[in-house]
Amino acid sequence: MMAIRRGEWKLVKSHEGPFIDADPGVLSDLSSAELYNLAEDIGETRNLAGARPDKVKELSDVWQRWNRQLAKPLWDPPRARER
Image 1 (cartoon, rainbow, N blue to C red):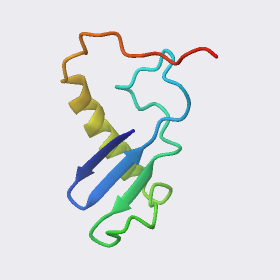
Image 2: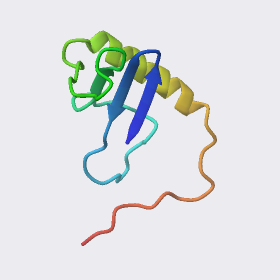
Image 3: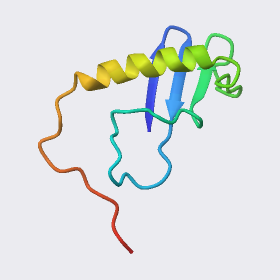
Image 4: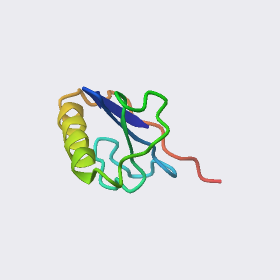
């Protein structure tokens, strides 16, 4: 899961499925992203992602730029277990 807040806007994106070969620093699929205007909807009940794709793109771009600046982990992140 990732979230970013900038001003009155908050973008939340959950990851569906296992992280097999997924790059957690890339938000390529924003179809399930949720966007809220906290000034008008503090309870986060109205998802505005469909109405404001421009704001979804803006916030996801900001998050990805920030995430690329972080140090890579020194360990190998756990992979999904085969069952």
